[in-house]
Length: 81
Image 1 (tube, rainbow, N blue to C red):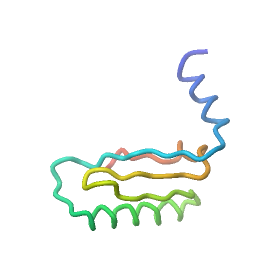
Image 2: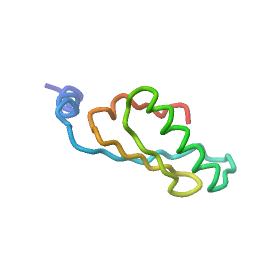
Image 3: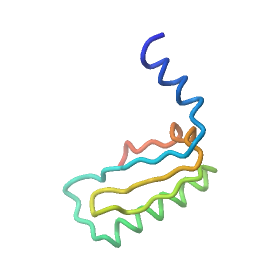
Image 4: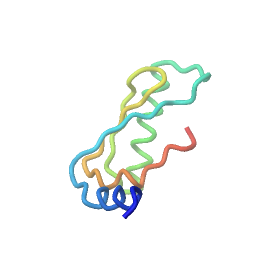
């Protein structure tokens, strides 16, 4: 087994909560209220896809997310932030 196969197998069995941080694009001016609104919108969007996640603004360039079902983390992609 190579490393990617091992990681895939480990993610299949991850059942507890998970959390992470998303760094927002640099160079875009945001207020703390704008970051809070972005976090609220992401929470709503993921709920429409039946993914139980909560986002909260940490500062003007980062958002933290928590997920009760850690195996859902593979469903979330932040490539267009």
